[in-house]
Image (cartoon, rainbow, N blue to C red; front, side, top):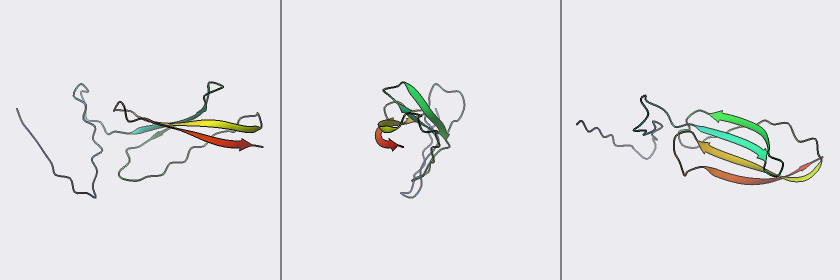
Length: 95
């Protein structure tokens, strides 16, 4: 058995995922989805490369044809790890 360890400084991040049942090396990346939960409508799905520290993402989508106030749901999902997904409700006004 070979043990390997690396000390990470506070300013560095590890993007390599720890996946014991995956045969190849893999970086942890993300999927950002935007939709309308009430309508079962997916407006946008954007994959993101691994993020080191802080990052920004632009999600482009076509506004629904229906005008008025509505709640959009933004979901951020990891493609490697369970339990760290995040979900936000974003109120918007479509004119």
